Image (cartoon, rainbow over all chains, first blue to last red; front, side, top):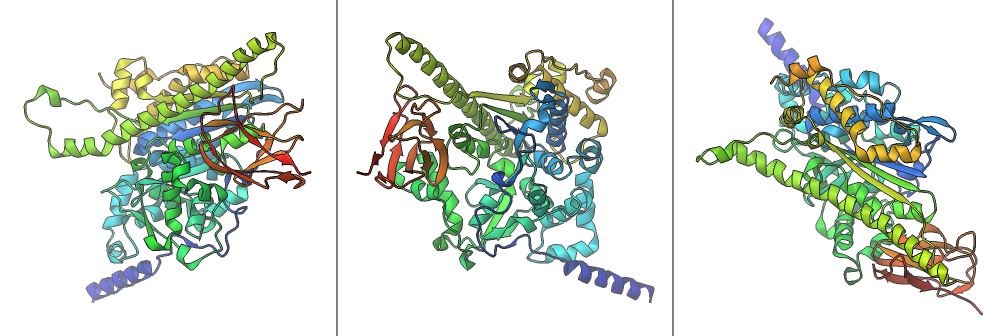
Length: 487
Length: 78
């Protein structure tokens, strides 16, 4: 009798939970280029575009989330004298673009700016997230749900993040806040192998309304590491129509012979969601790190052209921007390898680790270099024009046009910049997981702040803003270090 | 990336692919150089439609540099 009751209760629990599957995204009634979660809909609120700051947060599980929190703590403490009084550099941040582990930090900050620094560690960093996820997957009623075609491990993860970290918030909350920074949570479109961002600009292409999507779902997609978590599936409603009107840049960019290959390819991918011939009724999303593990590719589109809805060129042309600053928090590791000391070939796990992380690391390095070189060229243009003008002035001749003077800075914060070799090796050998001991999390935060304050690029920016600025002292706690990194 | 000067006798707002890029001239009346990504773009002016052509599709290239910008010319209707 007791067994029968237990079985009945179990079946009821399974039935109830299996009915609780809500769609990830819903159809957009009517396309409106002015509505939804877009950069232009966020209020400046004292954050002027004149100083345009972009942060990017890399992937790397809890390690990346803790590292990016440390960077934000450093930016909070970087106070400078501005014309209207003292300001925190953190309040100047306009955009945060993140992938995977970094997306937890970005999303939590966007949703809960007031309690971010006090609550984020306990809400996420100090949790054994992967242990909790395994326990949820092993809870018998969830077996039935996982057996359903519209519910998978990623949905279970999203549900867990929604309940325990993001308090059931949807993107409508971010729209209502109308507050910068603009958060770009990046996943990877499996079919295209390219970035898919959780913004209304992207969801317009699916004729879908981002406002009802849970932030936890976007974070789950952004951190859906292949193999461990299943892809997240979103419905593409483009076939049902929403009066979507392709932006003019897209029509122009699709003329193959009149465009650089990169712009044409980007436009082709962009338009694939609306192309009925391709029958893309469902879009499957994986970890954002597969498409770009540093979160910098989206900003690069905005930095290097006029096509993005928050194009920096457009802001420069409209005289809204005078300084552009990109700070990339890259929590990449470089685990010690002893392969070359042995005759035996590396095993299958080593090979798999290399093929999953090697190309991502190389691509991230190239992206950072791409932005740095691009900024160097832009800064050089201003110098060339000024030099040329000084020559032309002597001949009483006028220059044909006047460019807008803008300064560009790009800095990357990563463990390989640590002067202390032992600490660097320790950080570079931390695991990628959704659980790290509290001491490791605390040390990562201290290391991130240290790297920020020691960064020559950041120091230069701060002294441009305030000549008297001195970096606050950052100390690595020796006892903590000895505990996390025993020699 | 190309540098572009949009010529017109008056100070006018310039639109590239439907988005404002600010004015073609600065406060001193000198031509401003606009930064535009390489590729095909459609340019038009804001204000009175007393100019020809009504719009121009132009391939912007990096041949238009900071010293010698690419020129896009609009003429006032007679």
